[in-house]
Image 1 (cartoon, rainbow, N blue to C red):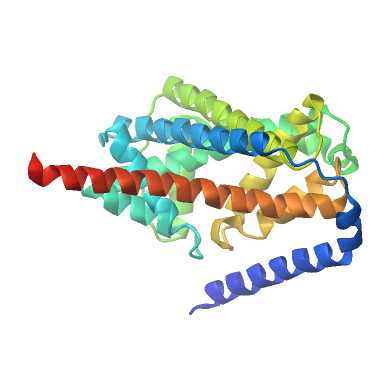
Image 2: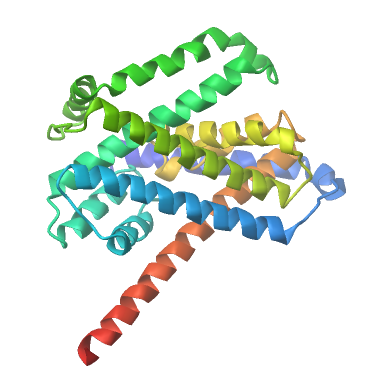
Length: 305
């Protein structure tokens, strides 16, 4: 076990311990808090999560097709959901390697799959960060947002890095730093903007699904939906960009609790951040279960056909 993996384990344990101690220290407040449990909103949140993921994987599938690697939607869903099973291994790369290996079974070159994943993550992250930055810069609901407003307005300028040739140069420098082979971006400028728009839709769907999850636990109003959406986008991208912990474990919860604390008591915000993690895991297990059942049915029908 190298130092990076040790550091990841230590960080995860410390983050979870901190969240646990925070909940424990405010347990009396949690017990007296007037929770408004609404199972219907929880079901809607799970449906919204799966719908957003299906649209997201179809967007990734279109990138892969543009690189010469075509997968039927059903097979792409298998690659997407089954690779999620290993996403909690420290390093945040095993999921991508798993996707490349599974797609290779269908004749898709591994380099095409890995390139599509790099582009997927780059464009998706740029869309999410820009959305959150614009929202927080345009509102005054948080004191820290006011302090960083000039910087937040500059974040969307990063979209200029998505110009295909410039994106290719930046990505290859980053890949070279981690000793990965270079990629070739074959997308046009117009295709990049179409993908950017699709990822904006993905983030909006995920954010609204998260807002439904929060509503299933406590009362929030529709005017709070933009803040909840921006909270989800910021927390998720912060967890992903941390790169140290598996699937941003601990980082995502911390950022989410900080932002939710603007609307709700801190102890409640912490509980919701933990529930949100469980919500994501439930969605991943549901998707993996469906595709595994589909594969089992296909293999069962194979001999008879």
